[in-house]
Length: 54
Image (cartoon, rainbow, N blue to C red; front, side, top):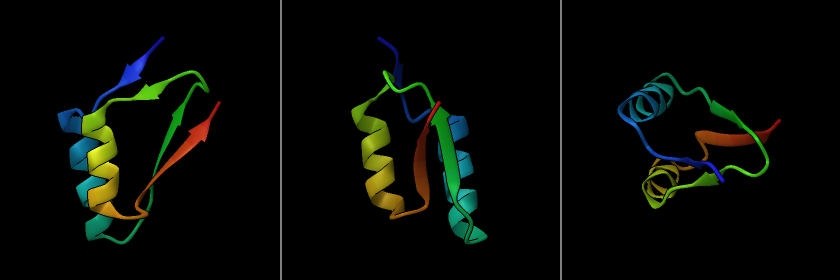
């Protein structure tokens, strides 16, 4: 099982997407889980971050 965390790069991309009013699409395998830090980031940024399954 893989877990995706809110790394510095993801946080930076997310806040840049908010700034320019774009969406950040995370394309990950279906079985990939999101760490609580990433779930918190998603709640913080509203609908800016989207998950797309491969």
